[in-house]
Length: 84
Image (cartoon, rainbow, N blue to C red; front, side):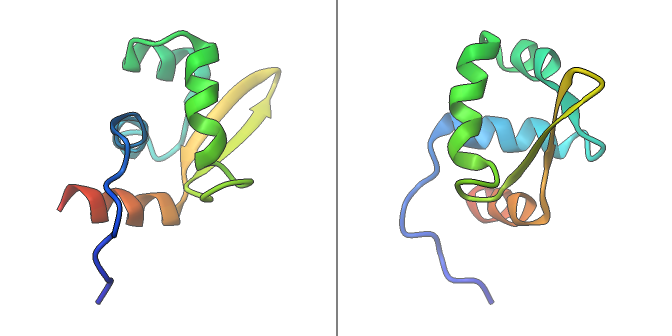
């Protein structure tokens, strides 16, 4: 059994995780920016603390000169914690 999260997740974090949960194969940065109604630069600022260097909830990579973002298993677990 997981312990309750002591801090609520910021809304932008939850929105990113929820959008990525709908596309397990990952999404492009422009797709995610459009989905969230933000500019790509704003999305990158939200992604930074959620990726491998931070919480590890996202996998961010560049494939064929295109940014790809996907939810990691840890990110899926985090989304489940904050939405239940």
